[in-house]
Amino acid sequence: MLTGPIANTSPVGSAQHGYPFLATDVDLRSAGYVEQEFFVSGTATRYATRGTDTATVVSTGNPYRTRLVVRRPADARAFNGVVIAEWYNVSNQWDQEVDWFQSHEHLIREGYAWVGVSAQRAGVHSATGLKAWSPARYGTLDVTAGGTVNDDSLSYDIFSQAVKAVRGATGKKGPLGELPRPRYVIATGHSQSAGRLANYYNAVQPLANVLDAVVLHGGGGVLRTDLPTPVFRVNSEGDVSGGILPAAARAQADSAILRSWEVAGASHGDWKLIRDYGPLRKRDIGSYPGGYPGEPQTCALPSLSRIPQHMVQNAAYDHTLAWIAYGVLPPAAPKIQMTDAVPPAIARDSLGLALGGIRLAQQEAPLRINTGTNTGPGFCFLDGSSLPLTGAQLAQLYPAPRSYADKVVATTLADVRAGYISRSFARDPAWYSDIRDLIGEYVASGAVTEAVGATLEDRLRHAERAGLAGDEPPAIAHLRQLAERAGKQITDAAARDGVVRVTLALADLLTEARKLDQPKGH
Image (tube, rainbow, N blue to C red; front, top):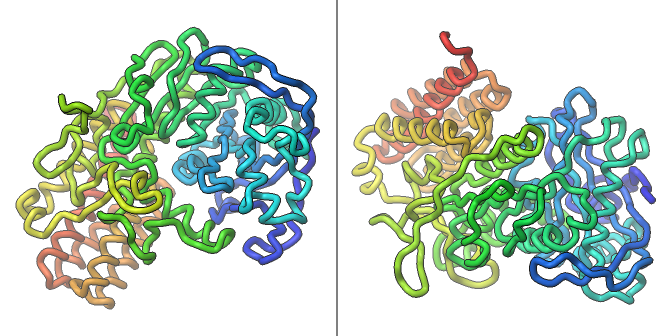
Protein backbone atom coordinates (compact mmCIF):
# COMPACT_ATOMS: atom_id res chain seq x y z
CA MET A 1 0.00 0.00 0.00
CA LEU A 2 1.43 3.34 -1.08
CA THR A 3 0.29 6.63 0.46
CA GLY A 4 1.28 10.05 -0.79
CA PRO A 5 2.83 12.25 -1.76
CA ILE A 6 2.75 13.38 1.88
CA ALA A 7 2.05 17.09 2.07
CA ASN A 8 4.33 19.43 3.99
CA THR A 9 2.50 20.93 6.96
CA SER A 10 5.15 23.51 7.82
CA PRO A 11 7.98 25.27 5.99
CA VAL A 12 11.26 23.39 5.65
CA GLY A 13 13.40 24.23 8.68
CA SER A 14 10.51 25.08 10.99
CA ALA A 15 10.38 23.74 14.54
CA GLN A 16 7.15 21.88 13.72
CA HIS A 17 9.08 19.44 11.48
CA GLY A 18 6.19 19.10 9.08
CA TYR A 19 8.47 18.29 6.16
CA PRO A 20 10.70 15.34 5.14
CA PHE A 21 13.65 14.79 7.48
CA LEU A 22 16.84 16.09 5.80
CA ALA A 23 14.75 17.60 2.99
CA THR A 24 17.27 18.65 0.39
CA ASP A 25 18.59 22.18 0.10
CA VAL A 26 19.53 21.59 -3.54
CA ASP A 27 17.63 23.90 -5.91
CA LEU A 28 15.65 21.08 -7.48
CA ARG A 29 13.14 23.37 -9.16
CA SER A 30 15.83 25.05 -11.25
CA ALA A 31 17.17 21.62 -12.19
CA GLY A 32 13.73 20.39 -13.27
CA TYR A 33 13.45 17.98 -10.34
CA VAL A 34 10.94 17.49 -7.53
CA GLU A 35 11.21 16.02 -4.03
CA GLN A 36 8.29 14.04 -2.62
CA GLU A 37 7.75 11.71 0.32
CA PHE A 38 5.54 8.60 0.44
CA PHE A 39 4.56 6.04 3.03
CA VAL A 40 4.69 2.34 2.19
CA SER A 41 2.85 -0.22 4.29
CA GLY A 42 2.10 -3.92 4.15
CA THR A 43 3.22 -7.18 5.67
CA ALA A 44 6.83 -8.29 5.50
CA THR A 45 8.64 -11.58 5.69
CA ARG A 46 11.18 -11.97 8.44
CA TYR A 47 14.39 -13.53 7.11
CA ALA A 48 17.33 -15.22 8.75
CA THR A 49 20.63 -14.68 6.91
CA ARG A 50 23.90 -16.56 7.24
CA GLY A 51 27.06 -15.89 5.28
CA THR A 52 26.50 -16.16 1.56
CA ASP A 53 23.58 -18.59 1.88
CA THR A 54 20.12 -17.85 0.57
CA ALA A 55 17.90 -16.52 3.36
CA THR A 56 15.45 -18.73 5.24
CA VAL A 57 11.99 -17.58 6.26
CA VAL A 58 11.42 -17.10 9.98
CA SER A 59 7.89 -15.73 9.79
CA THR A 60 5.50 -13.98 7.44
CA GLY A 61 2.68 -11.47 7.78
CA ASN A 62 4.60 -8.95 9.92
CA PRO A 63 2.93 -5.53 9.53
CA TYR A 64 5.11 -2.53 8.75
CA ARG A 65 4.85 1.08 7.63
CA THR A 66 7.82 3.12 6.45
CA ARG A 67 8.70 5.98 4.15
CA LEU A 68 10.28 6.68 0.78
CA VAL A 69 11.84 9.98 -0.26
CA VAL A 70 11.87 10.52 -4.01
CA ARG A 71 13.92 13.05 -5.96
CA ARG A 72 13.16 12.74 -9.64
CA PRO A 73 12.84 14.63 -12.92
CA ALA A 74 9.58 16.49 -13.19
CA ASP A 75 9.46 15.87 -16.94
CA ALA A 76 9.49 12.35 -18.36
CA ARG A 77 11.67 13.56 -21.23
CA ALA A 78 14.49 14.25 -18.75
CA PHE A 79 14.29 10.79 -17.10
CA ASN A 80 16.98 8.31 -18.16
CA GLY A 81 14.84 5.40 -16.99
CA VAL A 82 17.03 4.45 -14.01
CA VAL A 83 16.22 4.63 -10.30
CA ILE A 84 19.04 4.73 -7.76
CA ALA A 85 17.49 3.17 -4.65
CA GLU A 86 19.55 4.10 -1.58
CA TRP A 87 19.41 2.15 1.65
CA TYR A 88 19.57 4.93 4.23
CA ASN A 89 22.62 4.82 6.48
CA VAL A 90 21.66 4.84 10.19
CA SER A 91 25.06 4.82 11.89
CA ASN A 92 24.19 8.13 13.55
CA GLN A 93 20.83 6.72 14.72
CA TRP A 94 18.95 8.66 12.05
CA ASP A 95 18.55 8.42 8.27
CA GLN A 96 21.40 9.78 6.19
CA GLU A 97 21.60 9.62 2.38
CA VAL A 98 25.36 9.48 1.92
CA ASP A 99 25.30 8.49 -1.74
CA TRP A 100 22.87 11.27 -2.62
CA PHE A 101 25.15 13.81 -0.94
CA GLN A 102 28.12 12.45 -2.88
CA SER A 103 26.59 12.14 -6.34
CA HIS A 104 23.46 14.29 -6.57
CA GLU A 105 24.93 16.77 -9.05
CA HIS A 106 25.77 13.95 -11.45
CA LEU A 107 22.48 12.09 -10.91
CA ILE A 108 20.51 15.25 -11.71
CA ARG A 109 22.66 16.10 -14.73
CA GLU A 110 22.21 12.60 -16.19
CA GLY A 111 18.48 12.26 -15.46
CA TYR A 112 18.50 9.55 -12.80
CA ALA A 113 15.70 9.31 -10.25
CA TRP A 114 16.79 8.77 -6.64
CA VAL A 115 14.76 7.02 -3.94
CA GLY A 116 15.75 6.77 -0.27
CA VAL A 117 14.32 3.84 1.69
CA SER A 118 13.95 3.84 5.49
CA ALA A 119 14.36 0.14 6.23
CA GLN A 120 16.05 -0.12 9.64
CA ARG A 121 14.86 0.32 13.21
CA ALA A 122 17.43 2.95 14.21
CA GLY A 123 16.32 5.34 11.49
CA VAL A 124 12.67 5.06 12.53
CA HIS A 125 12.54 4.10 16.22
CA SER A 126 15.69 5.45 17.92
CA ALA A 127 15.63 8.45 20.26
CA THR A 128 16.72 10.57 17.28
CA GLY A 129 14.80 8.62 14.64
CA LEU A 130 11.89 9.72 12.50
CA LYS A 131 9.13 9.01 15.03
CA ALA A 132 10.80 11.11 17.71
CA TRP A 133 11.84 13.86 15.29
CA SER A 134 8.28 14.44 14.09
CA PRO A 135 5.55 12.47 15.90
CA ALA A 136 2.89 14.27 13.90
CA ARG A 137 4.40 13.30 10.55
CA TYR A 138 6.04 9.97 11.31
CA GLY A 139 4.21 8.67 14.38
CA THR A 140 2.50 5.86 12.46
CA LEU A 141 5.73 4.44 11.04
CA ASP A 142 6.80 1.05 12.38
CA VAL A 143 9.40 -1.43 11.13
CA THR A 144 9.22 -3.71 14.21
CA ALA A 145 5.79 -5.35 13.69
CA GLY A 146 4.39 -3.56 16.70
CA GLY A 147 7.52 -4.06 18.79
CA THR A 148 7.61 -7.83 18.30
CA VAL A 149 10.67 -7.86 15.99
CA ASN A 150 13.50 -6.01 17.67
CA ASP A 151 16.25 -6.63 15.17
CA ASP A 152 16.56 -5.67 11.50
CA SER A 153 15.40 -9.00 10.10
CA LEU A 154 12.38 -7.30 8.50
CA SER A 155 14.52 -4.69 6.75
CA TYR A 156 15.33 -6.90 3.77
CA ASP A 157 11.75 -7.55 2.72
CA ILE A 158 10.79 -3.96 3.51
CA PHE A 159 13.49 -2.83 1.07
CA SER A 160 12.24 -5.33 -1.53
CA GLN A 161 8.69 -4.08 -1.23
CA ALA A 162 9.80 -0.46 -1.48
CA VAL A 163 11.60 -1.26 -4.72
CA LYS A 164 8.53 -3.11 -6.00
CA ALA A 165 6.44 -0.03 -5.25
CA VAL A 166 8.85 2.10 -7.28
CA ARG A 167 8.79 -0.38 -10.14
CA GLY A 168 5.03 -0.86 -10.18
CA ALA A 169 2.91 2.20 -9.48
CA THR A 170 2.66 5.02 -12.01
CA GLY A 171 0.53 8.15 -12.23
CA LYS A 172 0.06 11.03 -9.85
CA LYS A 173 -0.16 8.76 -6.79
CA GLY A 174 2.89 6.68 -7.69
CA PRO A 175 6.35 7.39 -6.30
CA LEU A 176 7.62 8.41 -9.74
CA GLY A 177 4.57 10.48 -10.57
CA GLU A 178 3.95 10.76 -14.31
CA LEU A 179 7.31 9.22 -15.18
CA PRO A 180 7.20 5.85 -16.93
CA ARG A 181 8.06 2.70 -15.04
CA PRO A 182 11.84 2.52 -14.62
CA ARG A 183 13.80 0.28 -16.92
CA TYR A 184 16.33 -0.45 -14.19
CA VAL A 185 16.71 -0.14 -10.43
CA ILE A 186 20.24 0.03 -9.00
CA ALA A 187 20.53 -0.31 -5.22
CA THR A 188 23.22 1.70 -3.48
CA GLY A 189 24.41 2.08 0.10
CA HIS A 190 27.38 3.39 2.03
CA SER A 191 29.23 1.90 5.01
CA GLN A 192 26.76 0.09 7.27
CA SER A 193 24.25 0.22 4.43
CA ALA A 194 26.78 -1.39 2.10
CA GLY A 195 27.00 -4.22 4.61
CA ARG A 196 23.22 -4.56 4.71
CA LEU A 197 23.07 -4.58 0.92
CA ALA A 198 25.80 -7.21 0.72
CA ASN A 199 23.65 -9.40 3.01
CA TYR A 200 20.61 -8.56 0.88
CA TYR A 201 22.47 -9.50 -2.30
CA ASN A 202 23.59 -12.86 -0.95
CA ALA A 203 20.43 -13.85 0.89
CA VAL A 204 17.35 -12.08 -0.45
CA GLN A 205 18.03 -11.00 -4.04
CA PRO A 206 17.90 -14.69 -5.15
CA LEU A 207 14.36 -14.82 -3.71
CA ALA A 208 13.04 -11.34 -4.50
CA ASN A 209 14.89 -10.64 -7.77
CA VAL A 210 13.84 -6.98 -7.76
CA LEU A 211 17.25 -5.34 -8.38
CA ASP A 212 19.14 -5.03 -11.63
CA ALA A 213 22.46 -4.20 -9.96
CA VAL A 214 24.02 -3.17 -6.65
CA VAL A 215 26.64 -0.51 -5.90
CA LEU A 216 28.44 -1.07 -2.58
CA HIS A 217 30.18 2.11 -1.45
CA GLY A 218 32.59 2.02 1.48
CA GLY A 219 32.40 -1.59 2.61
CA GLY A 220 30.28 -4.67 2.05
CA GLY A 221 31.25 -8.24 2.85
CA VAL A 222 32.09 -11.37 0.88
CA LEU A 223 29.68 -11.91 -2.02
CA ARG A 224 28.41 -15.11 -3.54
CA THR A 225 29.49 -15.72 -7.12
CA ASP A 226 26.57 -17.68 -8.57
CA LEU A 227 24.09 -14.83 -9.15
CA PRO A 228 23.64 -12.96 -12.44
CA THR A 229 23.09 -9.57 -10.77
CA PRO A 230 26.14 -7.29 -11.20
CA VAL A 231 27.82 -5.69 -8.18
CA PHE A 232 30.14 -2.67 -8.25
CA ARG A 233 32.33 -1.97 -5.20
CA VAL A 234 33.79 1.51 -4.71
CA ASN A 235 36.11 1.85 -1.73
CA SER A 236 38.39 4.54 -0.38
CA GLU A 237 41.91 4.22 0.91
CA GLY A 238 40.41 4.53 4.38
CA ASP A 239 38.10 1.57 3.78
CA VAL A 240 41.11 -0.55 2.87
CA SER A 241 43.42 0.62 5.67
CA GLY A 242 40.75 0.61 8.37
CA GLY A 243 39.35 -2.85 7.63
CA ILE A 244 35.92 -1.48 6.71
CA LEU A 245 36.34 -3.49 3.54
CA PRO A 246 37.08 -6.98 4.97
CA ALA A 247 40.23 -8.63 3.64
CA ALA A 248 38.26 -11.62 2.37
CA ALA A 249 35.93 -9.34 0.42
CA ARG A 250 38.85 -7.36 -0.97
CA ALA A 251 40.45 -10.60 -2.14
CA GLN A 252 37.50 -11.46 -4.37
CA ALA A 253 38.61 -11.13 -7.97
CA ASP A 254 36.83 -9.10 -10.61
CA SER A 255 34.51 -11.20 -12.72
CA ALA A 256 31.58 -11.00 -15.10
CA ILE A 257 29.38 -9.91 -12.18
CA LEU A 258 31.83 -8.11 -9.85
CA ARG A 259 33.93 -5.01 -10.30
CA SER A 260 35.99 -3.45 -7.47
CA TRP A 261 37.60 -0.02 -7.47
CA GLU A 262 39.78 1.60 -4.81
CA VAL A 263 40.53 5.34 -4.68
CA ALA A 264 43.95 6.37 -3.38
CA GLY A 265 43.98 9.18 -0.79
CA ALA A 266 40.22 9.08 -0.24
CA SER A 267 38.56 8.62 3.13
CA HIS A 268 35.41 6.82 4.29
CA GLY A 269 33.75 10.12 5.20
CA ASP A 270 35.18 13.00 3.21
CA TRP A 271 35.17 16.75 2.65
CA LYS A 272 32.33 16.76 0.13
CA LEU A 273 30.06 14.59 2.25
CA ILE A 274 30.45 16.70 5.37
CA ARG A 275 30.19 19.99 3.48
CA ASP A 276 26.94 18.96 1.76
CA TYR A 277 25.41 17.16 4.74
CA GLY A 278 26.45 19.60 7.46
CA PRO A 279 23.89 22.39 6.94
CA LEU A 280 20.99 19.90 6.84
CA ARG A 281 22.18 18.18 9.99
CA LYS A 282 22.46 21.54 11.71
CA ARG A 283 18.95 22.44 10.58
CA ASP A 284 17.25 19.16 11.53
CA ILE A 285 19.41 17.77 14.36
CA GLY A 286 20.91 20.94 15.79
CA SER A 287 24.63 20.24 15.39
CA TYR A 288 27.23 20.11 12.66
CA PRO A 289 29.15 16.89 11.98
CA GLY A 290 32.76 16.63 13.06
CA GLY A 291 35.17 18.31 10.67
CA TYR A 292 32.64 20.76 9.31
CA PRO A 293 34.36 24.06 8.37
CA GLY A 294 34.43 26.51 11.26
CA GLU A 295 33.71 23.85 13.87
CA PRO A 296 36.36 22.78 16.43
CA GLN A 297 38.76 20.25 14.98
CA THR A 298 39.13 17.31 17.35
CA CYS A 299 41.16 14.84 15.29
CA ALA A 300 44.94 14.46 15.49
CA LEU A 301 45.33 15.73 11.90
CA PRO A 302 43.13 18.12 9.93
CA SER A 303 40.23 15.83 9.12
CA LEU A 304 38.41 14.87 5.91
CA SER A 305 40.29 13.91 2.78
CA ARG A 306 39.70 16.29 -0.10
CA ILE A 307 40.21 13.69 -2.80
CA PRO A 308 36.95 13.98 -4.81
CA GLN A 309 36.07 10.30 -4.65
CA HIS A 310 32.53 11.20 -5.71
CA MET A 311 33.78 11.70 -9.28
CA VAL A 312 34.74 8.03 -9.32
CA GLN A 313 31.41 7.06 -7.78
CA ASN A 314 29.60 9.01 -10.50
CA ALA A 315 31.41 7.01 -13.16
CA ALA A 316 30.57 3.78 -11.34
CA TYR A 317 26.83 4.47 -11.64
CA ASP A 318 27.16 5.17 -15.35
CA HIS A 319 29.24 2.03 -15.91
CA THR A 320 26.70 -0.01 -13.95
CA LEU A 321 23.96 1.23 -16.25
CA ALA A 322 25.96 0.31 -19.37
CA TRP A 323 26.71 -3.07 -17.77
CA ILE A 324 23.07 -4.03 -17.20
CA ALA A 325 21.66 -2.35 -20.30
CA TYR A 326 24.25 -3.37 -22.89
CA GLY A 327 26.49 -5.95 -21.26
CA VAL A 328 29.51 -3.62 -21.33
CA LEU A 329 31.87 -4.62 -18.53
CA PRO A 330 33.26 -1.69 -16.53
CA PRO A 331 37.01 -1.17 -16.77
CA ALA A 332 39.23 -2.84 -14.20
CA ALA A 333 41.34 -0.68 -11.89
CA PRO A 334 44.58 -1.27 -9.98
CA LYS A 335 44.32 -1.88 -6.26
CA ILE A 336 45.97 0.28 -3.64
CA GLN A 337 49.43 -1.08 -2.91
CA MET A 338 50.18 -2.74 0.41
CA THR A 339 53.46 -3.40 2.22
CA ASP A 340 54.77 -6.82 3.15
CA ALA A 341 54.45 -6.03 6.84
CA VAL A 342 52.33 -8.15 9.16
CA PRO A 343 49.65 -6.98 9.17
CA PRO A 344 49.95 -5.30 5.76
CA ALA A 345 49.81 -1.50 5.63
CA ILE A 346 49.23 1.02 2.85
CA ALA A 347 52.40 1.56 0.82
CA ARG A 348 53.27 5.27 0.66
CA ASP A 349 55.68 7.56 -1.14
CA SER A 350 58.09 10.01 0.49
CA LEU A 351 55.30 12.55 1.06
CA GLY A 352 53.06 9.97 2.72
CA LEU A 353 50.71 9.55 -0.24
CA ALA A 354 49.24 6.10 -0.86
CA LEU A 355 50.52 4.22 -3.90
CA GLY A 356 48.40 2.37 -6.43
CA GLY A 357 44.64 2.47 -6.79
CA ILE A 358 42.67 4.94 -8.89
CA ARG A 359 44.68 8.14 -8.79
CA LEU A 360 42.87 11.40 -9.31
CA ALA A 361 44.72 14.64 -10.09
CA GLN A 362 44.46 15.72 -6.45
CA GLN A 363 46.61 12.69 -5.56
CA GLU A 364 49.03 12.76 -8.50
CA ALA A 365 49.55 16.52 -8.39
CA PRO A 366 49.12 17.07 -4.66
CA LEU A 367 48.55 20.39 -2.94
CA ARG A 368 47.69 18.56 0.27
CA ILE A 369 48.61 15.22 1.79
CA ASN A 370 45.26 13.44 1.69
CA THR A 371 44.94 10.08 3.39
CA GLY A 372 42.25 7.73 4.58
CA THR A 373 43.61 7.57 8.14
CA ASN A 374 43.37 9.70 11.26
CA THR A 375 43.03 9.30 15.01
CA GLY A 376 40.97 10.99 17.67
CA PRO A 377 37.48 10.81 19.18
CA GLY A 378 34.23 9.92 17.45
CA PHE A 379 34.43 9.27 13.74
CA CYS A 380 38.01 10.57 13.32
CA PHE A 381 39.13 7.09 12.27
CA LEU A 382 36.68 7.26 9.36
CA ASP A 383 37.29 10.82 8.25
CA GLY A 384 40.86 10.56 7.01
CA SER A 385 43.11 13.59 6.93
CA SER A 386 44.15 16.48 4.71
CA LEU A 387 47.33 18.34 5.57
CA PRO A 388 48.32 21.28 3.33
CA LEU A 389 51.79 21.15 1.81
CA THR A 390 54.04 23.99 2.83
CA GLY A 391 54.96 26.84 0.51
CA ALA A 392 58.47 25.43 0.24
CA GLN A 393 57.18 21.98 -0.70
CA LEU A 394 54.87 23.43 -3.34
CA ALA A 395 57.62 25.58 -4.81
CA GLN A 396 59.85 22.53 -5.11
CA LEU A 397 57.14 20.35 -6.67
CA TYR A 398 55.87 23.03 -9.05
CA PRO A 399 58.57 25.59 -9.95
CA ALA A 400 56.02 27.36 -12.14
CA PRO A 401 52.19 27.31 -12.08
CA ARG A 402 52.23 25.75 -15.54
CA SER A 403 54.03 22.64 -14.28
CA TYR A 404 51.16 22.00 -11.88
CA ALA A 405 48.48 22.69 -14.48
CA ASP A 406 50.07 20.32 -17.00
CA LYS A 407 50.13 17.48 -14.48
CA VAL A 408 46.52 18.03 -13.47
CA VAL A 409 45.40 18.00 -17.08
CA ALA A 410 47.42 14.91 -17.99
CA THR A 411 46.20 12.94 -14.96
CA THR A 412 42.56 13.93 -15.39
CA LEU A 413 42.47 13.12 -19.09
CA ALA A 414 44.11 9.76 -18.37
CA ASP A 415 41.39 9.04 -15.80
CA VAL A 416 38.71 9.96 -18.33
CA ARG A 417 40.23 7.69 -20.98
CA ALA A 418 40.47 4.86 -18.45
CA GLY A 419 36.81 5.35 -17.52
CA TYR A 420 37.49 6.18 -13.87
CA ILE A 421 35.72 9.53 -14.10
CA SER A 422 32.96 10.60 -16.46
CA ARG A 423 33.42 12.67 -19.60
CA SER A 424 31.33 15.41 -17.94
CA PHE A 425 33.97 15.79 -15.20
CA ALA A 426 34.46 19.49 -15.94
CA ARG A 427 30.91 20.26 -14.79
CA ASP A 428 31.61 19.07 -11.27
CA PRO A 429 31.36 21.95 -8.75
CA ALA A 430 34.28 20.59 -6.71
CA TRP A 431 36.75 22.19 -9.12
CA TYR A 432 35.32 25.61 -8.27
CA SER A 433 34.75 25.07 -4.55
CA ASP A 434 38.40 24.01 -4.20
CA ILE A 435 39.52 27.35 -5.67
CA ARG A 436 37.03 29.23 -3.48
CA ASP A 437 38.30 27.44 -0.38
CA LEU A 438 41.90 28.24 -1.26
CA ILE A 439 41.16 31.93 -1.73
CA GLY A 440 39.27 31.93 1.56
CA GLU A 441 42.20 30.32 3.36
CA TYR A 442 44.60 32.94 2.00
CA VAL A 443 42.24 35.76 3.02
CA ALA A 444 41.85 34.27 6.51
CA SER A 445 45.64 34.06 6.91
CA GLY A 446 46.17 37.63 5.70
CA ALA A 447 48.14 36.57 2.63
CA VAL A 448 45.38 38.01 0.42
CA THR A 449 43.46 41.15 1.32
CA GLU A 450 39.69 40.99 1.66
CA ALA A 451 39.29 43.43 -1.23
CA VAL A 452 41.41 41.34 -3.58
CA GLY A 453 39.72 38.17 -2.39
CA ALA A 454 36.33 39.67 -3.24
CA THR A 455 37.38 40.55 -6.80
CA LEU A 456 38.76 37.05 -7.33
CA GLU A 457 35.60 35.44 -5.99
CA ASP A 458 33.53 37.60 -8.32
CA ARG A 459 35.37 36.21 -11.36
CA LEU A 460 35.07 32.71 -9.90
CA ARG A 461 31.29 33.01 -9.52
CA HIS A 462 30.92 33.97 -13.17
CA ALA A 463 33.21 31.12 -14.24
CA GLU A 464 31.34 28.61 -12.10
CA ARG A 465 27.94 29.63 -13.41
CA ALA A 466 29.06 29.10 -17.00
CA GLY A 467 31.18 26.02 -16.32
CA LEU A 468 28.47 24.10 -14.49
CA ALA A 469 26.09 24.85 -17.35
CA GLY A 470 28.58 23.32 -19.79
CA ASP A 471 29.35 26.67 -21.43
CA GLU A 472 33.13 26.42 -21.41
CA PRO A 473 34.28 29.49 -23.42
CA PRO A 474 33.04 32.16 -20.97
CA ALA A 475 34.10 30.00 -18.03
CA ILE A 476 37.62 29.79 -19.46
CA ALA A 477 37.69 33.55 -20.07
CA HIS A 478 36.63 34.33 -16.50
CA LEU A 479 39.20 31.91 -15.07
CA ARG A 480 42.00 33.47 -17.11
CA GLN A 481 40.89 36.90 -15.90
CA LEU A 482 40.99 35.57 -12.35
CA ALA A 483 44.52 34.26 -12.84
CA GLU A 484 45.61 37.57 -14.35
CA ARG A 485 44.15 39.55 -11.45
CA ALA A 486 45.74 37.20 -8.93
CA GLY A 487 49.11 37.60 -10.63
CA LYS A 488 48.90 41.40 -10.46
CA GLN A 489 47.06 42.04 -7.20
CA ILE A 490 48.39 39.41 -4.77
CA THR A 491 51.72 40.52 -3.34
CA ASP A 492 52.44 37.41 -1.27
CA ALA A 493 54.39 35.15 -3.65
CA ALA A 494 53.18 31.83 -2.24
CA ALA A 495 49.54 32.93 -2.26
CA ARG A 496 49.87 34.39 -5.74
CA ASP A 497 51.35 31.18 -7.13
CA GLY A 498 48.77 29.12 -5.25
CA VAL A 499 45.78 30.90 -6.79
CA VAL A 500 47.28 31.14 -10.28
CA ARG A 501 48.27 27.47 -10.15
CA VAL A 502 44.78 26.06 -9.56
CA THR A 503 43.01 28.60 -11.77
CA LEU A 504 45.19 27.91 -14.80
CA ALA A 505 44.72 24.17 -14.25
CA LEU A 506 40.94 24.46 -14.35
CA ALA A 507 41.01 26.75 -17.40
CA ASP A 508 43.16 24.18 -19.20
CA LEU A 509 40.86 21.36 -18.12
CA LEU A 510 37.84 23.16 -19.53
CA THR A 511 39.71 23.70 -22.78
CA GLU A 512 40.42 19.98 -23.02
CA ALA A 513 36.84 19.11 -22.04
CA ARG A 514 35.62 21.02 -25.09
CA LYS A 515 37.83 18.86 -27.29
CA LEU A 516 36.35 15.70 -25.81
CA ASP A 517 32.89 16.80 -26.93
CA GLN A 518 33.92 17.68 -30.49
CA PRO A 519 33.52 15.13 -33.30
CA LYS A 520 36.71 13.50 -34.52
CA GLY A 521 38.43 15.48 -37.25
CA HIS A 522 37.56 18.87 -35.73
